[in-house]
Structures are given as structure tokens and as C-alpha cells.
Image (cartoon, rainbow, N blue to C red; front, side):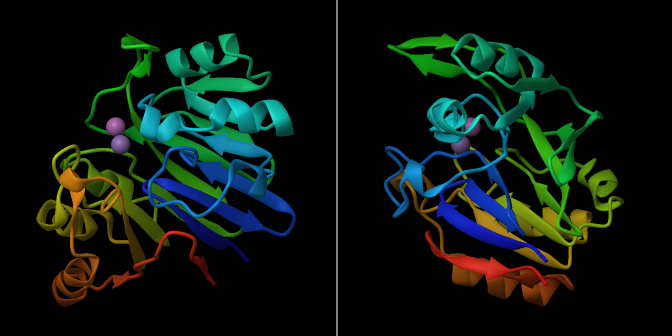
Length: 230
Ligand code: NI
Ligand code: MN
């Protein structure tokens, strides 16, 4: 039994029993979020890459809750130096256990850096996460283009694939629909759109395209909306 809460942009929270996992918790400064960082008390935070619209409120939430923060190695080191007590670095192909589940790092084609006062820090590479939690397998693509090895990620037998559709910084709707064909999830959830002007997209049109061209069901969530994945 697991539920998914779309905070907005690429920020999500998964809940199962009394366990909570956050993914890319960008809340403060997120133009579409109606939540506040204090609304969440995760045991685990998963980060896809260092861009500020993904790291978001990670340090503040982790300092308050003691959450284990899982990211690629260089970013985990940076977050550790920024005051996160329990930052665990992994890398592509590796699986890391957390309270109630695990995540496997998979590739993502993008860049990764954290900006502080106009300086880009926290080098490293981006990743996607294949999360096993609450009896479900949920893939968070992070920011990425379409790539052929998504077919291998599809071999993980995904219940849900969370994919960016915004274009400009990531794949757009047409490539995201091709990604769904490679990933073969039961359900696809679009994200990383309508947050800022360059990534405006029509999610209803994406849903129609996905459900016409693939067997997957497309679940469009509004920021602040929760859905049960059972
Ligand atoms: Ni990014
Ligand atoms: Mn992004």
C-alpha cells in the first residue's frame, strides 16, 4: 500500500504506513507548490541531480528530520559538507537500502551542478532512481532525454514511471511517449512541466497520446494532489 503526493515540478513524496520517502524536494521557491517543507517528515530523501530545482529544501528537511539522503557520490559529499548528517552516496548500477525499501541508481542524460551565489558547485552526474517501496516499483527518471537503455530499465518491471515532459531542459512529450514504450510501466506520471514558461506543456494531450500509443495508463496529477498506487 503506497500513495504518491505530487508536490509540483519534480518533487514527490511517497507514503507507506508510517514511512515517507521524498524525491527532489523543491518546495521553497517552487512557483506551483502549495505545500511547505514543514508538511513533511521523511525518513529518506532521494535526489536525482544537483540542480537547485531538484535539491530544493533537502538540507533543511534533512537537518530537521535526520532523514537519510541518497544521491550520486559527489552530491552526497557536498550535502554532507552542507550539514546533512546522513548523506549516502551511490552510483549507477548500485542499489542502496533505506527504511522500508531500496533504490537502484540508473543512468540519466543531463548535467548536474548546484548554484550558490552565481558559482556552480557540487560536480557529479545525474541519475534516475528505480525505487522499491510499499510493494511497488516506481521509476523516477529525473531530468533526462530519451535514451535507448530505457529498455533495460523497463526490464525492472515497473509499476509506475515518473517522466519529465517539459521539453527545453529534458525530453518533451513526443520523446516521453517513446520512453513509455521502452519502459513498459503500468502507469506513467508526467512531471517537470508548467513550472516555468519554457516548459509549458499540455498534460491532457500527453495522456491522450500515451494511452493511444502504449498500453500504459497515464495519471496526470495537479500540484498538491495525492493518488493511491494500489
Ligand atoms: Ni536539471
Ligand atoms: Mn530540472
